Length: 477
Image (cartoon, rainbow, N blue to C red; front, side):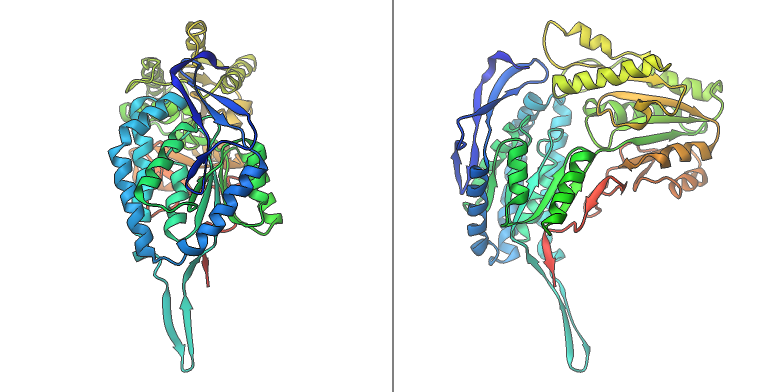
């Protein structure tokens, strides 16, 4: 819950429809809290389906002229936006720190990574040219890409700038118009970004933003004028979004949660591996879908190297300090997330797991100061069937488990029905190749704990993770 006082002064985040900031049709607002202090730093509109209708209508009207522009002219405006993001990156980072709780370095990285996708979108005039060929004496085939229409983007709290940029710049440059629904937990960043988009020269109605919760999301998905939906959030909700879009015959990319595994062989570099493991599971307070949450130590649990590796992971994680300054670790997003993480730790301990590093001390130390604090935690499990070994915690918790063989490690990784990434730590290329061919996750790292692809490579996963019919904002003829 938010504290009543406002630090900094209270900011009202309304909707942005047809080039104008407008209040919701309802008089209702939700508080926006600083997760590091629980201070009330703003309020965000709680919109209705009536607001959704206005935004989609504006986007539909703007599509008529926006889609007829050349892709080069649309990319030129996006290039101006790219420059404005760079010029205002520190201001955007400060907003991310205030509403999300990342440390300042992580917040700057959020902005920089999102702007890389903006930069990629600026190259679309060369990438979406299409093809034409005379395939026989009287037949010519043409492959071209036309915009779909109104694209809806529903995004989560954990990367306030980067995740919206997975959809917005590409959809816009390809000639679509967009209605964005930011997380009600972190609306301040994209509210400022809307100003930058307007300054860059995007016409009224091309980009719209509606604030709210589930009611707004459902109204956006169901609206008959919406042609495509992108969603990032939990796996259960991603499945619901996908099924809802399927029933309406709408294109959809729905990204859910993850359970990511790190596998360390005895021949790995202890210093590099221990540092990378800590960054992977504790970076951004573990609130990212690429974060590691399970470390499988292969070989004799009493072996000198594996014992030393685990000791170094604990030592480096224990050295992390609480805070939003560079090199520190920020809070989790809200008290509900904090309670959920604490419950996972308690259940693991009750089931026989050893708490090698207890982040609950942060919760106790900051109980009077406010904020949703929980420190880096390391659990050593005696059973691979513990809930924390199989379910997404979405916090700074690392589950460690000893396995005797390579095959056992693969079996544990393969059994998880959702995931983004896996990584193998070894100094032997042949060993790395053996694991790369057998892990189930689609994004794989060798001595890299966060194997995030960069443009032009796409983000992928396996099995239940991505519910995607068409990962495209354009129609192929």
